Image (cartoon, rainbow, N blue to C red; front, side, top):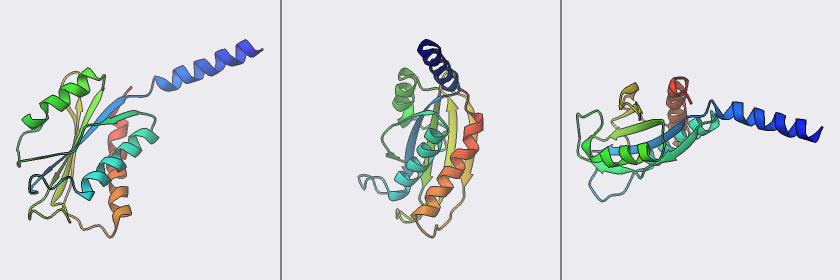
Length: 158
């Protein structure tokens, strides 16, 4: 009886883990003075999206927040090393959260772009943007980040 129960538990865990994807999240900011450190919005978006991915049963990691010059590149060259680390680390997906500021102030982002890359091919699976918005409080911004992640989750396959 104990062996059957233990086998059933292992089977359930095995089936549940088949749905889990490994997701690497990175926040990048543009338009802020270099050396100013990452803004509160960067931490809120990273936390909100990582929480949503984790709550959906995915394995989540992150790379350090970076500040770069404004770029038109889909995957800025400054992030090639981080993308390679995600690949070497076994990530299935690389989620780039690009937060742009227009006035050099970290108070209110101009816009937030989210791009989801399939690590094995480098192709973009999903892209969305959040236009300039003044959130009433941190909780509202956090919920928007989780909502954005909720739109990404159905596209992730373990």
